[in-house]
Amino acid sequence: MTSYKASGRYSIAGLLGFWIGALLGGILLSAGYVYLLGLVSNLLLRVLVVVGYDVAISGWLIWLVRKTKIRNTRVVLFSSIVLLLLAYYNNWAIYVMFVQDTWQKGASEVWAYHFQFPLLLERWWNLVRQPGEILGAAIQILPTGFVTINQEQLRGVLLLCTWIAEFLIMFFLPLYHVVYRAARPFNEEKQMWLPTKEEWAVTYLDNYREVRAGLRSKDQEPLLQALESMHYYQVEGQESYAIIEFYRHRKKIGPYISITNVKAVQTGPRKLVHRAVAVVKMLDIGWEAAEALYHRMYQEYQQTEKHTARSAKKNRRSLEDRVSTFSFNLSRKSKDMASEMKSSASLKKKHKNRLPRTDTQELEHNNSEESPASIEEITVHVPHVTPEMEKEYLKKQKSQKRHE
Image (cartoon, rainbow, N blue to C red; front, side):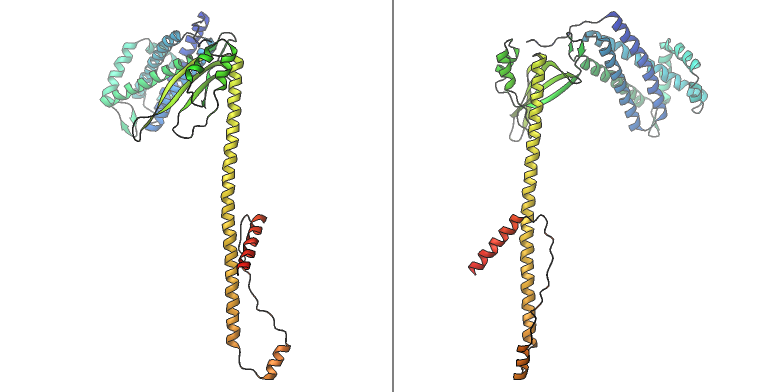
């Protein structure tokens, strides 16, 4: 088994299509970027516009790389550098044109003027061919300032620092993103990219050397033994674990996997760091083996989730039972106590109101039917009272009566 290496193949037609598409996309995205910044003056909104430009141009270049099937990362790097610089230069051309028209015609008329597309294209084409004029206009804008952020106009050194930060964000971030995504594996056999990288946590591989040798072995038995030693692991704290990465295209799992050991190391009394050690990187283990490993990881993940949910439900149920039992016993005791207090109060009242009687009165009293003292019932809401709780309570009452 060997690790993935880019074949470096590309076609002239594909490279030409990549350049044409990137130039057109860069011109349109730069124009949209400048006009959106002309509409907003809030700092947060301007940051969102810059981030949106980076995401849009990065996604466009990555889509072009995959459609044109350029598998040479050096070609992608060189082409992206040139195209991003051209897009930034076009951004400056449109910005200078926008500033000059605003100064000459006013902020209210510049938008109507710029909606005249034939004149706008002609003016843009004349300006973009004169880099000296664009540089001179930038030098004129610098001391006076044109950018207004949060009702404060930037000029001088502060405006220059803003331009530098804008260039770094608009150039290096898309460049890194494009080259990083272009390094994803491309399978020459099935002529497809595997653009999506999916990570799973597995148990820490103490015998990572044996696992690496088994994965690289051409024999089937060592490969299967190495794959069976990896199981899904749910990271709960700062313990050691491993990460396995799959590369896929939609629902198709590619043959390449990457494994990294993440070891927790104690470096002080209360200091714990994690050190990553690569075991294999983009190793080709075959389509069937990679797909079987992925599905086994997914099944183990589902089983772990079910067990976790069952344990949480059991713990919650036991807590509810304890609360219900406590509420049940408390309500019974309160009811008995209220009954005893009511009975004692009625007896005290009866003895207090009793007067000396004659024999005739006592005889009439004995002949009359005396109604028992009424006891008011106290209704207490007891949630989740089960028959088992009732039986347990009756047993306790019987045992207490026996002792009495």
